[in-house]
Amino acid sequence: MNQLEKIRGHLKTINEHKALVTKLCFRCGLYKQGLLHDLSKYSPCELKTGFKYYQGYRSPINAQKEAEGHSYSWLHHKGRNPHHWEYWIDNAKDGLKPVAMPFEYVAEMFCDRVAASMTYMKDKYRDDSALKYFEDNRHSTVFHPDTERQIHYLLQYLADHGLDKTMKRIRFLLNRYRQTGSPGI
Ligand SMILES: [Zn+2]
Image: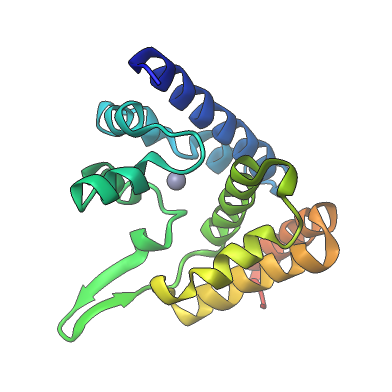
C-alpha cells in the first residue's frame, strides 16, 4: 500500500466509524456526545499514527504498539475521550484504581463498541459480536465493578433482544439515570 492509499483508507475508516457512532448515539438521545465522539482522531498527533500504521482490518494504534512497544497517539486519545474506560483510571496511595463511569459515557462506549464490531467484522457481524469481544478481552480490562456490570448488561441485552430494542432500553435507562442519579442496573 502506498502512502496516499493509507491516508485515504484511514480517513475513510475514521469518518465512517464516527458517522456510525453518531447515528447510534442520536438513537439513544445522546446528541452532543454523538457530535463530539472521537474528535481528537482529527488532531495531528493521532492522524500521524493513523496514516503511518493504517492496515484496514484492525486499529492502527494496535499496529503501532506492536511495532514501537507503546503508542503516544493512544495516550493522547484516551486522555481526551471519556467514553474509554482507560480515561477513568485514577491513582491513589495504594496504586491505580478504576472510577465508575457516568452512565452517559457507558452508553457512548456501548455505541462505540457496536460500531467498531460492525466495521471490522463486516458481514460476519452478529448481535452477540460486541459481547463476545468484551468477554474475550476481560482479562486485559480494568473496569469499576458498576461500569463492568452496566456495559455487560447492555451488550447482553443486545445479544438477546437486537439493536432496536436495545436503543429503546438505553433511552429509558438514561432517563432514569438523569432523574434518579442511577440507571438502576
Ligand atoms: Zn474513541
